[in-house]
Structures are given as structure tokens and as C-alpha cells.
Length: 449
Figure (cartoon, rainbow, N blue to C red):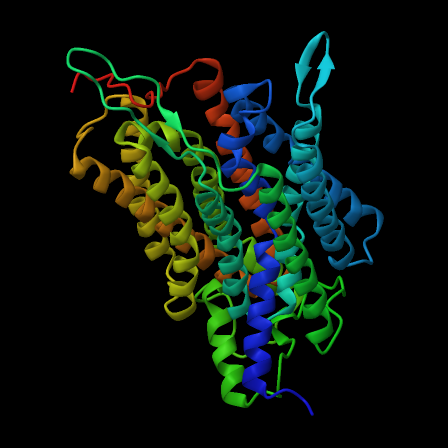
């Protein structure tokens, strides 16, 4: 007996979300596990600078996908997606086995295995943006929000796992009169980095299995390279005319007000015209700018803006900021802003909070309200609102581009990845070369409070 339509719909949303969960889980997991792995690797706290470069070089994955499309234009996204998932799963499993191995290079010990495997994971994650998103053109627009919900979980779940592990838990010894406190006491983690990477591997296997389940669930093969009738693919029972009209209404925001005749049948030329319209270009621009900030600029300054207010503020900003992403996706499922002016206004609001956070990082280790509860509340709230607003803009802009089919979602994936690259490249000189930002020290008052 066939599954009821509602059950089939919910199952499809769940599979899409789990599919999206595997997009960036591996690299996000490496970042949150850094406080543990630096203890056993010779590079120490220079590793973040190495990782920033490796993630930027991971954009070579975009070139590999582009080459694939040129050499095998008749194939769809299924093959590249499975390659990306295999690289993520195998790379993370090897990381669990080999992350602590050290190899001499030019007479100096280096963590060659850790850096090499991280580069492989960066290649896979960067390629996911231009393979996963075009695949979703074969599904109706609401499933795109489920995908971004899962992508938000790819940041949240590694953070929660690291908190359960006890990453970065320390205690400052009491200071005697007229003396400075001793060195901080770091508590041992509840489980090792290898266990952390094995759990992460399990999540990636679940994501890959969800994609295979999604392929089995869909009534037609989504591997057709024709860019076109993604929103017309049916999931579940045949739809009524009212449901078709609702879907068309959701798809319509990308259309120019006077540029599309009512009731016209979509075709590749009209979709290309929509993508190249002023509205389409502006949406791609919003995606580029917002992702440059949330994936490049802001992660580079998070520790500088939060640590002066204490470890608690830092952990709250990381976890609640990661939680803001899936919550923004939930909001977009119910309330989708279709106005370009509205999305631009939200972007300015996010930029306001982002500017405040950058200012705190520049003023580190003695930003305003340091040592006060108000300072902790403001920095955590700013991180949550900034990431939440930008995540909503990202989901909404991608949803509006969905009407353009596979080419539009491919362009959205490229815009997301290019923005992330530009943000990371822009922040590398001030953070790693010129040392513009100064970090506080645990259990040491550098502000004379």
C-alpha cells in the first residue's frame, strides 16, 4: 500500500533536511574541535590560519564540478553528489584514525595527515554548494527551505557535540591578595577527538543514506540535466488545481512585474531572462554579500569579539548563533519575504549588528562593557540576531531564485561559494599577517578591572 500523501511529504522534507546536514558538517566539525586537536599537533594555535587557507583553496572543488559539467554535459548532479558525500565520509573517518600523526618536513614536525585530510574535506564541502542546490531544482520550492534547515544543522550539531565533549572547559584559580592568578586549569574532555570524528562520520553516513532514500522516494529520476521543470516534479499524491496555483504563486516573486505575461508557460529562455533580470542579479548579489559576512568575515573575528567577555559568552555566541540558522529556516517556511526592498532592509539590519561585532573585535581585548553582564548580553544577542537575519536573507533569496530552475540554483550556489571565498580572503591579512586583532588571555585581566 502506498504511503499516505502527508506521511510521504513529511518523509521527503526529513530526507531533504538530512541530505543538507551533510553539506558542511565535516569542515564545521574540524573548526569546533580545534581546541582539542591543537594540544597534540605541532602547529598549535597557528592551525586556524592554515585552515583558513585550506578552506579557501577548497574552492578548487568548484573548478572540478565545472570541468565535470563540460566533459559530461549529459549527466546530472547525482554522480558529483555521491562523490562529494564519499569524500566527506571517508575523509572524516580517516581523520578519526590519523589526525594525531606527525610527519617531519624539512626537519620540523608537521601535521601533514590532518592538513591533507582537511583540504580534502574543504574540496568536498565547497563543491556541495554547486551540486546539492541544483539537484533541488527538481523539487518544489518549500523543500529548499528544508535543505537550508539541514545545512544549519551542519553547523549546530558539531557545536552541540563539542559542548557535550567539554571542549574549552577551564577554571581560573583564585588570586591571592596583591598577586596575579595562576595559570588556568583545563579540564579533560569527556571523550577524545577520534571519538568526535567517528560520531561526525556517522552523521555523514546518515546524510548520504538520506540522499539515496530521496532518490528512491522520488517518482521520477532527478538526474536529467535539463534545467527546467523542477517545480513540476510531484511528491506524493497528484495535486489539485488549487495546489498548482499556490505553487505558481510561490514561484512568481522572481518575475519582473511587467516582464511576464500572465499564464505563460515557463521555458528555458524565460528562466534565463529572469535570472539575468535586475531582480535576479540583485538576489545573487545579496547572496554573495551575506555569505561573505557569515562564512568569511564574522567567523574570523568571533573569538576576538567574544572572549574578552569570558568563555561563557563565547560558547553561548557559538551555540545560539548556530541555532539561529535553523530557526531562520523554520521562519522562512511560514513567512517568506518576497520583496527585494524588504530583503535589502533586513541585510542592512544584519550589517548593523555585524559592524558592532567587528568593532568589538577591533577594540579587543578591552571592548566596551567588558566585565559586565550587559556586555555579555549585548555580544551574544548581536551574534544571534546577526546570524539569524543573514541566514533568513540567504534562505529567502535562494527560494525566490528557485523559479529559475537548475541554472538559477547553480548560480545561487556559485554566489554563496564566491562570497564565502571573498570574505575569507579579505580577512586573512588582518587576522594572520598584520595581527590587527588582539585576543584576551584566559584568567588574565588585561584591562585593569
